[in-house]
Length: 78
Image (cartoon, rainbow, N blue to C red; front, side, top):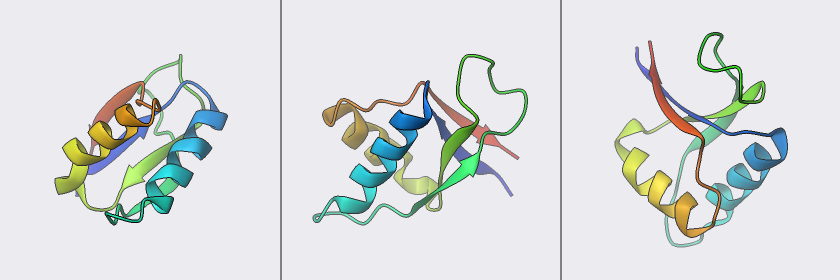
């Protein structure tokens, strides 16, 4: 099964992004914090956000960009 992982530079950004995704009243973005899989990058923190509905990836990234919380990377892991 392929997982969609959003990575961020710091844990603080991960937590801010998760809060923004869960607090959006107009849309439902299903996600969860998850340990960053090994080998993605050394310039990111040890936690990431996993999207539980990968079909929403473009919407989630656009939403986070609007919130000035754009991820450092979007990765398909599987």
